[in-house]
Image 1 (cartoon, one colour):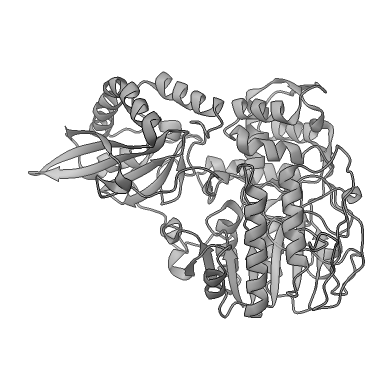
Image 2: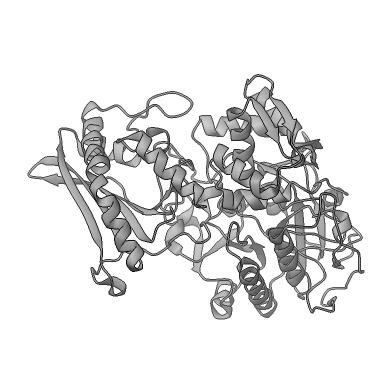
Length: 582
């Protein structure tokens, strides 16, 4: 089957691609920047289409010859116009799917409370439902961060992340169903959740058959929901918590989500309906924290609910305690206000449960922690682009955009081999730190989080190796030339654009470490910012230059999580595709 995976650089998409390849499907990845996939281990096995879902011409080209589409596009942590952007992209892309004759769209969404939606009947293939506002009845949307939408969904539909929905009656008929709104346990749907519902309705109202998989919390190494659970539990032995920790949810393991997604590329029947998907456990978020503590070998956590904490305060609380920034934490927290429990398990008619049954929460947490300990986290929540973060490549023209570039350039000889120096460079950030004034880096990260930025605690996907698109604390990898160059683009809140380059050079037979901090100011505020921080560069970048060179000379890197000093071994050989997600 010829499959198109949109959002292939994100958390779900980056794991789905190798699973589809392992199942024998042909895969084309659609991303806005082809370079984001360049260093993926499966990059040579797929086609890459550089396209924006909101551009009809680009979408049409990406869809040529495609039979099954996985729509994994949704804005997380965006500004006030995120719903309009998602609506435009979904409308344009749904129309493009119709014109291209796509056989099926698969959309991964979230469980929405049944009270939020009503059944309005089904449709036969090609028939549309309508509402007074012109929107399709059912909603679906996608999550790139591994955290499903919020609340519990009704059989008639709900909010979905990466696909469309299906019939409200749960039958195998091919009719799609609609949502009409209403109130849900825990309050009305959040703006992000409502946007996802709207996007789903757009797809469900199209003539292309759609399958919507509606999940609650997705548990897997590197997912935003798992990172939130992990850090809240590990860092707070005694917690005063909001009311949402007592809301019931039905988590599902990432490997079961991927198994369902892959299976729908091969189902022959024309199915137009949504399916609830969840693991075998139904429990509160407080219960989930207790399970995590038990699996991680932590003392039992004391949880004290505090009903006065609003979602806004809760998201800032989560942002301070976990690596998940407040802007992203808010839609996740708002999702937890509503129950997210499956109403049916009709998907088993088309995709049988695995012989050992679905993965329970305890086992899902064990698998996720194993992947983290073994540094085998394939994708992370931060793999997806951060809304509002700069994405411009480093300009080569000093008069780029009619402005100026400020540069702090330094170099130092290192009495070490180029390989040893590169090992230090590629391991920078995360647990290894930044080789100068840790307190200063931490304060800069804290300031960034206080103004809504990502902060310094995103860490790394892998403690030793980087690829284009990886996040490294408040940077993102823009370019990697193995053994020569690492270029990081800043994603902290700044009045301009910033990059940090780290180079391994050879001069007259000697190894040289080169380092450049580059800043392109935006307006007067940008210029003032540079001159305000310039005096501190000697305190930050000077020691960093010396300490990186000295670390290479010593040949010892900081010990990554899980123990064992990093070595200079070659990348693992064998099949680059992942077959055991966790």
